[in-house]
Image (tube, rainbow, N blue to C red; front, side, top):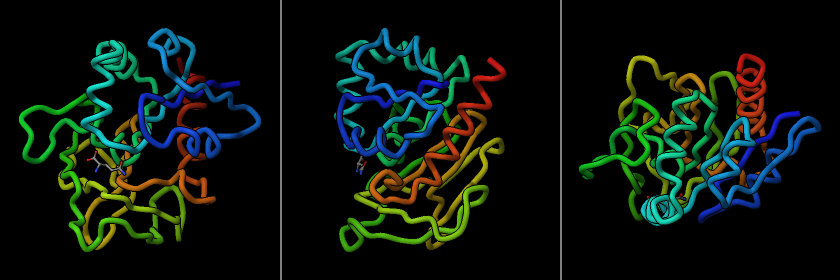
Length: 194
Ligand code: GLN
């Protein structure tokens, strides 16, 4: 049995809990720092990255989350969650948790494309993966140890760096749970080696 947490300070939590369901997976809604000790992997949901960051500071999550990442515990950030993971944010002096070597640009699809759906061909995950974009960021630069998993219209929208996985869209809002299954597999593999 592995235990995967969903950070529940703000944003689309319930849908992630549903998408992570598997016979050997226990899902924990994480509202307290102490819960980080019991989990093997963690999801940062979408929402509003600036609000999430404010709540991370307010509830004392900042250092514990950094420590969680330093132990190479897998983290999956979706949309605002991916913004929290980047080590550079366009137009901002400081990043948030800085766990992945990538630059993100917030709300990068502009007003015309505030929210839309697309089918993506994703490396390691599959063809025609359903993706819902909502005021989504793009990943406009990645470091040498980051693998690009998907692009849309030439922009990177999903990437992996070791135990860390990020995507610009909301994979929890469709019934296509292949990205969650991929993350569950990452957590299982890491838990064996821990
Ligand atoms: N636009 C939001 C941000 O910058 C992200 C949107 C989302 O998570 N759906 O944080």
